[in-house]
Length: 99
Image (cartoon, rainbow, N blue to C red):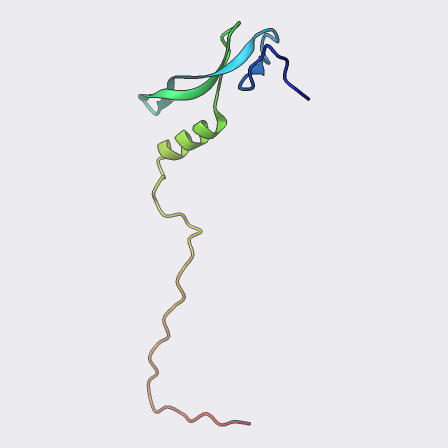
């Protein structure tokens, strides 16, 4: 399926108004983290040129959530554990006999 001639490749039809075109832009993203307002300048989004609907870039949202996660950088419970070190043997070593 090809794009119509008047719509650039980096645009999508708007799912809200169905008449406008969603175009990639950079804007300031706002979100609350507890009682603090977080602002992220130059955040990637798609904005409808007719109704103004905003859809934020999914990968950028996932990246931001990972950074803002209060547990970011902390070890997780499912970490690999190193195998226990062998304990030194005590007593007299026994010889190994072949069968």
